[in-house]
Amino acid sequence: MNATPLQPGKSFVATLRTKPEKREEFIALQTELKRLVHAYEPDAWVYELLQSDDDPDLFYCIATFRDEAAFEHHMHIDFHDRLVPPVLECLAQDMELAFFKSHQ
Image (cartoon, rainbow, N blue to C red; front, side, top):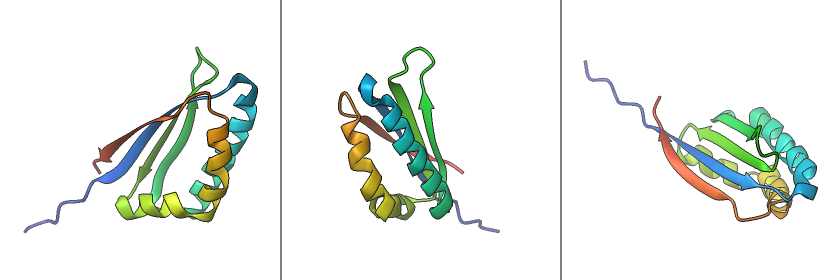
């Protein structure tokens, strides 16, 4: 019996440093984005925002998608286009973004 191997999912880890005065706005925007991803993107298996205990302006956003198509869908969904520009305006520096394969 030949089983078809599962294709790895697509994941990213974004490192985000906020401007201190924009931290609460950033959290509110990311919380809304997380809620919408969980509600409208069934192929987004993980979407989580983590805040450092030691540095309140340091965040990690971790996401895992079923495949490349699910990631592309995420990148072009209407609420992503609405929320990401103001999220980026809250940052003190460019985000660092790293991509990974997610093995099932």
